[in-house]
Structure formats: C-alpha cells, structure tokens
Length: 347
Image (tube, rainbow, N blue to C red; front, side, top):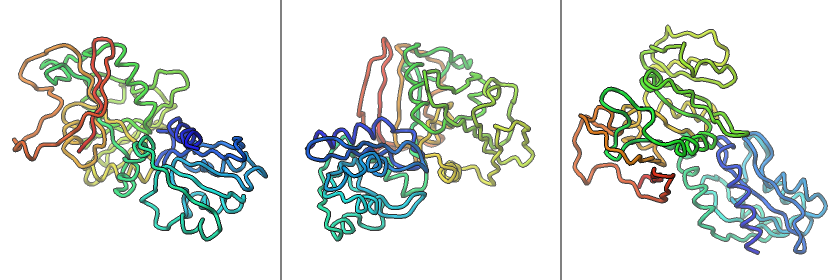
C-alpha cells in the first residue's frame, strides 16, 4: 500500500516550486491493485492533483482508493473542493500523507459522512515538503530561501568589491536549479551595479523566475543586462514616486514604506509562493535577521579573502548576546567539486 502513497509524494516533489501560493500535490488512483489514474497540481489555477487523477481514471475510480500526498481540500478557492470530486467519482477509500493544518473545515468528516474510509499515514518526506507552506500561508508571505556564495571567512567580495568568481562553475549550475525552483529572485540595486547579473535559469526547459528589485531610492540603471531581456517580468519596489519605465515587462511598484514584511505580503498577493534572495550583505542581513527566512543556502569556496569585512555576508549595527542571535540547523551538506554547499533551516 505504501508504494502508491510514495508515488503520490514523488509526483508532488516533481512539481515543487511551480505551483505558486498553492502546495505541490500528487495523487494516484488504484483499483484492484492497478493504477488507473495519476495527477499532479501543475500550477495555480489549474486542476488539483486529485481531480486530474480522477479524470484520468473515469469509471475505474468507482470503488477505488486514492492516495494523496496532502489531505484533500474542503474549501472553495480558484477551484471547487477536492472532497466533492472524490465523493462524486465513488472513491471507497482515501489515504493521505500529511494533514493540512491550514484548512478551516475538516475534509475527513465530509468524506466519512459520505461513507468513504479515510486513512492518515504520516510520511516524513511529505511533511518536509509542506512545512514551509503551512508557515508562510498563515503569515501571508512567500517561502524565502536566502542564498549566499562566499569565502571561508564569509566574504561575498573583497574590500574593493571584486566578487567574480568566488565559487566555481558547479556552484553556478546548482544556483541555476535553485532559481528554477522559485517563483521569484529578490535582489538590490547595489548587487546589480556591482555584478551586472541577469538572474536567468540557464538550464534546458528551465523556468525563468520573476526578478524583484528592491530600490527605496529608485536610483536604477536601466542600461544593465537584467533589463535587456524583455520576455521575463521585472518588478521594482521603490519609495520613489517619480521612477518610471516604458518597458512593458517592467512594473514599478510604489510602497510608502518598503519594509521586508510589506514587500513580501504584496508579493504573496501577486501569487508569488516562493522567492530566492540573491543579494549583497545589506539585503541578505535584513532577511537573516527577520522572521521570514525559511532556508539558508551557503556555498563556501576554499578561499580566505581577509580585509576589513565590508562585504561580510551578515552584518548588523548591534552586537547581540549569543543567546539572542539567529539560530540555524544544518539539514544537508554536499561537496560541489572543491566547494561546499550547506543547507540550513531557521530554528
């Protein structure tokens, strides 16, 4: 039985990062030991995984069991509740791996009242898939990953601003995949002026993230390379009412107070479910001190840059007691040739 639930989780993992503010979900319909329908939620506004799997199964769904990575929804959003579709198709049993703690109504009760057996089989790999989703949905902000490439002594650049290239080409390829898995990339004008990056995904069939630029002053150099790609949207958050652009792919978003919280809440309302922060020490430090960082990814090169630390990736005006500093836990580590990748989560 667990193999079918594992298949549903694998389907969800395959679409992780492309569903916007919705969770990635996979579903498998099984009748008499035979898979008769599979589905995955492909993007916000599309059919949910359960509906796709049931539509594929058709009449074979009657009396079948449906395995789902996440508890089926019981509310009206951009699509009707999945529990209604499950009842309509005559499913006899529902098995799911994670309870959706953000639901206001209990789908279990609705299914039970319709005579459908419901089983909850906890799966840690599925729980890890939805942990950040539950947190950010309650906050009304995207899931945030902060990415830093630096030397062993934590420098993103030398004191003279030289930063190309601290890490190796393998790290660059890994970062391309990170961008592919996020809806947006967040940066600042300091990084744009220093490195002239494009923030593209240079992989086959890679998803190009929306590029979000934070510029309170509105001092933006529109001759930079990032503005020479008219196909990808660019959103500029600024407090400068006079900032304008005639390019159709560039949207100027005025904020009276460009705090991280205000910007993230607005991004979530625009459908951004996940964002990758690729910026210099100022913006990176703001995110790491905030309550909105879910994951920190560090790429360490075996180099010691030294200097005064102008480009140390984490800097604060105040000196904190050790008991008050941000706490992380290492959840994964990997060698990328001679560079080290550390994946950390906020405690």
